[in-house]
Image (cartoon, rainbow, N blue to C red; front, side):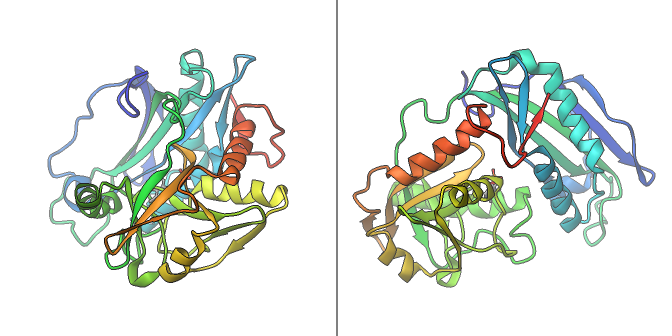
Length: 329
Ligand SMILES: *Cc1c(COP(=O)(O)O)cnc(C)c1O
């Protein structure tokens, strides 16, 4: 399969907001969007998106993972950007209709169909820097994706960045392109300078997350991660892992922690990044103030592996969906 994010199904779902209301959605051939060069999104970054997956089960049907939670998160993002908020049924049905149209094209697990709802402000007004986009386009792309771990599980190396921020207080938990733009420079600098995979943003010593994944520490008894606040993105993978961990008897400890505590704990705790693309990926090395510190013995740990497999078992239909996370298509 081609590189993640480069292959698309030949139709997509699209709906427009104009004259104060959402027009009916349609499934159309995937094609460039006609857009006025003065569109609000191009100048003032009125854009948010979602990312989640549908899995094809052995019986030929598909299951969308946490569809309604992702719809709710997109509504929250839209609201924070003062964009028109898509109704729950409008967006959920766009996703369901698109998945239904491409069920037969979904590769079997561990491959899947990645879904990317995107909302952009299309008001053609470059004078609207300090006012919301009252016109918008909502669309959903579908992209078949292969196994993230096809080359084996390789523990990641992270730069611990304790000065610069990934985002801002008002947009930290909004899934918006602007946050990726802010994280890109520091991440590329860190890759070039230290050969790391990602940057763990810890402004003023507060351990938050990387550019696109949440951060967790775990051992045989406990999972530690930052409690929800507006500084970071509330990952659905994070939430799902915490729920499954509690089911399996781990103590879930949502608490803020500092870089000093982190450096101390990684002598005995495993560390991991969570996100839709990779579910749970082990972190093997931290780089702090130019020094490399192994996380335990720098190898992939058993608890990361156990919880990743528990989540995948639900997604692939090998374990009970006891929390009602799956929508059948
Ligand atoms: C999307 C995203 C995540 C992961 O969220 P999931 O719902 O688990 O895929 C984490 N951090 C940021 C900044 C994100 O944009």
